[in-house]
Length: 150
Image (cartoon, rainbow, N blue to C red):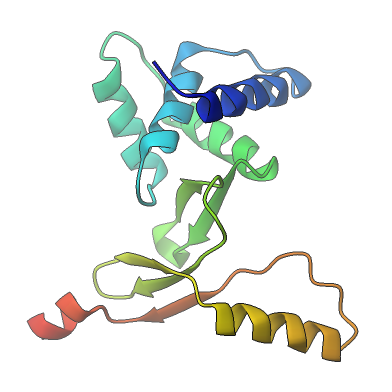
């Protein structure tokens, strides 16, 4: 049994699908469930593999996973982190705002939130008479585990 927050997400998802002329399917719902319960960020391939394990009787093609992720991202229900040639990793956009540190060695993504950085960005936007609507901060480097292994 899911909770009220999930039910609201599911209703919104169904509206988005309908507005785009796409069918609501259990496979697409399983994709939303997976993202809802997932703690970190996932590639389309990881999502596809997880969906196959969730419901071995149902088949979902990787193209459907990509199309659904693109639709969810366009609608603001998921966010992505671009990893360049490695593609994107996705997460549900129901978390409070946060930024990311990405390890260039192992791909680990560390989420963080810093009020000083957030306030400074708002101040800079005001100084330039710029109406800030959103931002994305990604810091790239080497995580502590990879530093130890060098």
